[in-house]
Image 1 (cartoon, one colour):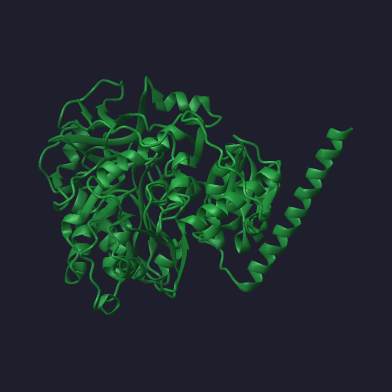
Image 2 (cartoon, one colour):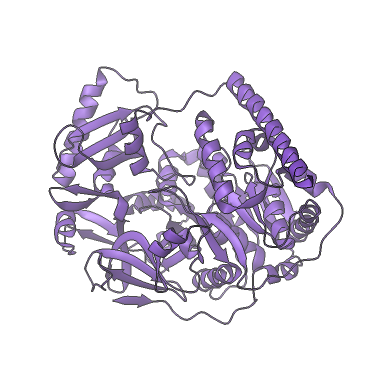
Length: 597
């Protein structure tokens, strides 16, 4: 069975870059919201003027058309300068995540150096405190043109003419989330980016010329970058941006900004809806109206129907329409979106028997809710296949394959991984799901399957009941298959204690409760349960838990909480970073002298 989305409309532009000069004339712009709700507005005309100046500075420092430029910046005007400036001079931006867990800086520097090298970036652009801490990554990766300060690039007054690419040119390298393997550099052409932008407009604005987008999503992540920034910049329209770290510190910033700006479209991963429902106080929303919010897109991780219902109930007094909640499915290898649910109806769930699904691959009624993520976006096709690649019919669990013009060219510099993933024009996503009534239901990832008594069980099936266990951090538990504690593969739970809950005598009762809750919900009792300190479980740059990496670290004895961050430790990190920059510069000079000889 193949699900096919509607046809794409004729392309408005050869590439999104072609749309930039026209977009500069739009009277709207980008509003940056601070933690204290102070706002900085940058009109689109100024955004593109800054990009032209940054592009000229990049070219003057040796960046040539087609070169990759790694961008390590937070949600700030400098990110737009660097990203659009790279496009302005014909280069290829590579957004990378800034340090978000300072207690794990060494891991971060190693991972960032690997991504700089894997992407082939010739220059890194950063600024401020982020740049001061990047020295270790720059020293390891040794990009040919070093690490430039975004502010210095903008300081020049020269502007460069916009360099228009071909649709088949490389337009963006975005890294996959890395929830099951190390993040891979996804190579996207300008044609793929334009196709996705056109498909999103069909899905989100079929009869509207403009919308107000509000986002706290990271700009290095496909939902925040492609879905929000590029959509608003190239169509164009008003865009309101909140830094993700500010949202996590004060989640009320998100609905308050939507109310203040009459936002119509906003997207978030599933955890954010539960986070707002649990953390936002009534006083934070008093007097606000959310009636303008017509699309609340929900994707990037397993979707909880219960969390969405709590979110809708919590915001109902502010006029939020439950029909605005739209579960979606996508991945970076498809540029962004693959399927959208139909707006205007409450999210549609189906209760299935997880044991029958695991044992027979058959969808029958049961007690585990799985939420529909809708049907393919324009231009996309979805197929369900077995492990040998044969197509499966409705109501059968299988691997989700995707085809369409927005697929990646491949993994940059990794032909073997590309060949394993792209097969005859189809992308094997590595996700499991089933189709009923023409809609896709996602059940989990192949690599996160837990084999219990010969049956393939979804890790989420064991993790979901733990969200309500007092004493555990909600959403901070992983289920993996392990031979630890006995022969054969059995269920192992790794769960973080809630903040403020010390290790000690209460652990016995908490361990017992974890076992009881999982057994009652799934019929399987965990063989081993490990209680961890808050922040111990490894995560991707977008916040997804890395189950396989958690198990690997447990076995290696390296699964430990992050180091405490103090002013002294930050000073030491900055000092080491300066030494690394100095060594990297000496290495550059030595290389230049060798070339001269």
